[in-house]
Image (cartoon, rainbow, N blue to C red; front, side, top):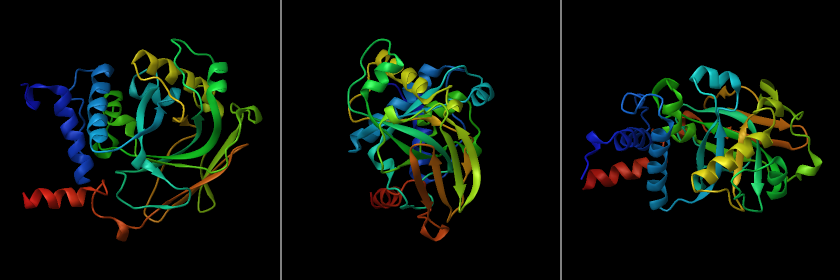
Length: 286
């Protein structure tokens, strides 16, 4: 049996999982993974996802990251990345997200697509995505990093499930036939003050372009998008840091609004994982 010390995928996964369970950010994992090897980073992501599924979690969809050319340049890549959305990451519109649930949280506004048909072709078109989409919703993604101080490269963020944290969906479904997502303006406000603005064109030129990329990529990997999946297509503007007690509202032209509210320090359990306290108590009794 290969020990974790001799297996870079397991070594990186253990480091990230420890940060998730304890709420203490870890050092970057790029020191234990091959330099620039995105496939190995996705192997870490897959191992961590499998562990969560074994614990009873459920895949609810996928998120697309690195959809900004500026961010790609900063991280030295020329392609987006993706992460898995799980059922315990969904927060109701306007409900409090307890502080500490997401490590080092930041927020960004996005267009979410909810599929009603599978996307299984080797290569997809925008028309394929439109036909497969049941409706769109406004979304706020609360990204978080288990990596200390957001000291990340592409390898780090991919291994860390594309820095996924939590997400909030609006509740008014809108058909794509009623939207022009490329020109749709977005404003993200903190208690009425704008903190981020943008438009659909900031997301790979069009949110549907990002969805096509994801559909093609997941088919190649043997995990095609399925009916019922939610796809977070990528940020429409710069992400913003959040603080305890913040209330953020995103408005996207044609889609309406969605709110994300954050608990105060007093709400925090002291960990980045709401189940971690119970886990640590169980381990202490062993």
